[in-house]
Image (tube, rainbow, N blue to C red; front, side, top):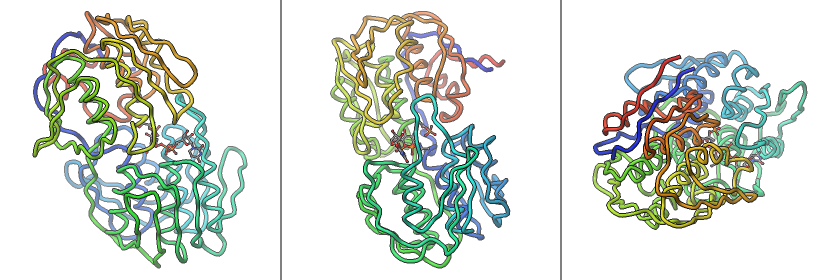
Length: 418
Ligand SMILES: CC(=O)N[C@H]1[C@@H](OP(=O)(O)OP(=O)(O)OC[C@H]2O[C@@H](n3ccc(=O)[nH]c3=O)[C@H](O)[C@@H]2O)O[C@H](CO)[C@@H](O)[C@@H]1O
Ligand SMILES: C=C(OP(=O)(O)O)C(=O)O
C-alpha cells in the first residue's frame, strides 16, 4: 500500500487549482441512468471514487468514456439492475443508483452499503421515501430488493432530519415519476443544486432549488445534456487549512466562497486571512491562530467533511476550542493519531476539547477515513520532522493529486509506492 512522506515546517506559497467536487461528480454520474441519450460531464475530478462509480455504471450497461481531459461521456441502455456487494462495499455512494434504476426500469437490487468508519450510516430515509412513491422493498441476504410494478408516483415526503443522499436519491427517482413530488426539509448542499441544474438541463422540472423544499414534477423522459461540475468546496476548505497551518499564502483557484458556508467565517474567527478574488479565494496567515469553537451542521452550517482538518488547525492554535460533531457518531478517529503527534485533544461524547500546543512532531500515523487522512497530512505539514501517513488509499478516494498540488507550493511531500 502506498504511503505519503512529509517533512514539515515549510509555508505553502503559490496557486492550487481546485478540482471538480467528488460528491457532485458521483451523484451526477448516476443521472446517466436516467436517459438513453449521452450525458457529458466536464470538470470531473480524477479520483478513485469516480473510477468506482464508472465501474458500477458500466456493469449496469452505461458506458463511461473519457472523451477529453476531465470530461466523461456517459451513454447506453440499462442491461442489469443489480448493484453487487463487491462494488458497493468499496463506496457507500453506490446506494445512489437505487432511485434512478427503480424509476427507470421499475426494479433494482442494490447491496446494502452498511456502515463505515465514521458511523453506522443507515439508508432508511432513502427506502421510506421510495416506498412513499410506490416502491415495494424487501431486505434480504444483505440486499435491497426494490420493485415498482406500477411505476413510481409523486408523494410529499418530510425528512425527519437532513440527509444529502436521501434528498439526491429521491430527486432522481422523482424526476421520472408520475406527478409531483415535494421534498420537505431537503438538504441544501451545493451538490444538490448542481444535481438539480444538470437534471433541469436534461429536461426535468424542479423548483425550490437552493431551499429546503424541493418540488419535482415528473416527466415522461429525460434527454442528453452537457454539464460542468462545481468546484470541490471541501477540497478548497482543506487547502485553506493547509495554507493557514503552515503560515503560508495560497490562491485557491476556482474556489467559490458561497459554497463554503460557515467554514469560511469560522476560519476567519480563528485568525486566517481570506479574501475573494476574481480567480478564487486567497488564503494566508500572518498572525497567530486562536482557539475557535465549531459544530458540524447541514449546509450552510460547518461541514462535517471539514471537521477533522479544522481540528488539526486548532491543535496548534493558541487557547482551547470545542469541536462538536453532530452529523456522524464516530468521526473522531483522527484524534488518537493527532495526539501521537503531540496534540492535546480529549473527546467527550460528540465533542472534542482541543488545547492548542506550540508545535506538533512528525510520526508514522495511520489514516482511518478520507478526511481523517488529510487531517494527518495537515499535521505533517506543520510538524517538526518527518511524518509518514499510512493507508493512503482513503486519501485517493477523494483528493486529486495531493502530493503534486502541495509540492508545487513548496511542501516537502512525496508518495512512497508500495
Ligand atoms: C457521497 C456524498 O455525497 N457523501 C456526503 C453525504 O453523505 P450521505 O449522503 O451518506 O450523508 P447524509 O446526509 O445522508 O447523512 C447525514 C446523517 O443522516 C443519517 N442517515 C442518512 C440517511 C438515512 O437514510 N438515514 C440516516 O440515519 C446518517 O447516518 C448521518 O448521520 O453527506 C454527508 C453529510 O454532509 C457528507 O459527510 C458525505 O461526504
Ligand atoms: C464521508 C465522505 O464521503 P462518503 O459519503 O463517500 O463516505 C466524505 O467525502 O468525507
